[in-house]
Figure 1 (tube, rainbow, N blue to C red):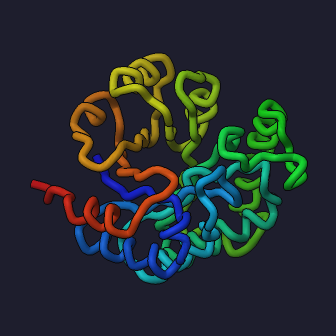
Figure 2: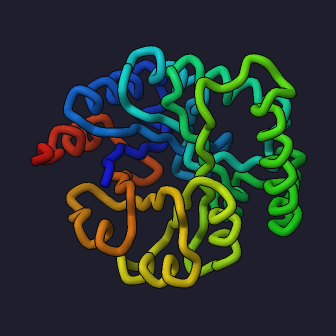
Amino acid sequence: MRRAIFVAPFDELSEPGLVAELAVRAEERGWDGFFLWDHVAYRPPVTALADPWITMAAIAARTSRIITGPLVTPIARRRIHQLARETVSLDRLSGGRFVFGVGLGSDRTGEFDPARFGEEGDPRARARLLDDGLAKLQAYWDGEFEPRPVTRIPIWVAARWPNRRPMRRAARHDGVFPIDLPGPEALAELLAETPIAGDVVVTNPPGTDPAPWAEAGATWCLTGFGPQPTKTEVERAIDALEPRS
């Protein structure tokens, strides 16, 4: 199992340079990845947000080993041709250390507000835009745009428990990021119903024992902090990583 830090670049961590410093620290301590939430807005009390793509570029430029990526990007919010340029540029900047996490986007965060941002509010319509967008994106990666990625960019698909349909979408790609799981037994249940050939990524608070999650089928265990992470708590979690035997 690989281990990663997963932060929202919000409020105290809305400075890209600070987040990049934390990623450097994580790499030095032996973590495998450093992933970011991808939002343009969030419900109160969050007030300040950094752009995750600029922040990931800072991480990629200052590290040499850890994997980075957004968890997750709502493709319905993006222009696919621009997203193709951004994903490949970040992949090349990182030397192939980029993973692309995708999903529908959440109505719970206040982000998909058609009146405010002019975006699609219907989840079913966003699902269609997600599937169509992924097909177009992969065509750009495969040569419709140059340059191409350093290597094939993995796609991880988010799935919110207990919804099963996103699991079927994830099985067509490179991994699944199930969220709101009540426990490892729920993960085992999902994977028994829909086997995933690629990565299985879970997130839990600091101090969570990853062993039961690995036994349930997880290949990545992320340490997450909620929507208002602080520098001190992230540093504490980074430094607490147990050395591999």
